[in-house]
Image (cartoon, rainbow, N blue to C red; front, side, top):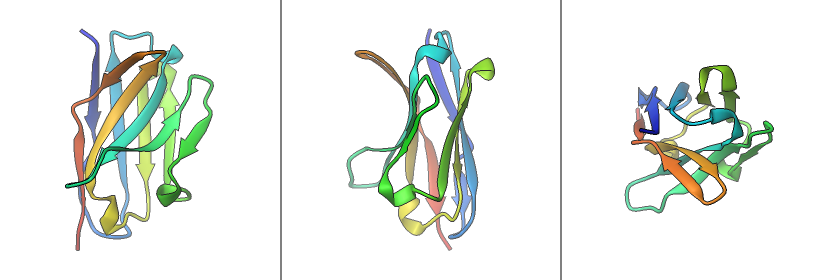
Length: 115
């Protein structure tokens, strides 16, 4: 069964850092476009960052300069390095793998930014 498993969420103070990890299994990882989405309470899920199979990256404006997405095809893993975290970054973060019309989601990991 195809799986995406996120880890690395937790509680952090404003200005702190976290690194999220998404490990994929049973997919040909290197041909998938990968992304991180988040959903805050009462809000719609939004795309935070993406990296395609060729390594091209995109970020939502609110995280540019603070978050970095990367991938390691040898480890079937995508990362999201989050620095200078703000209160408004609090959300459940989801890993996503896309290939054409196929979409795979992880179960999500909670990031709470609070003083």
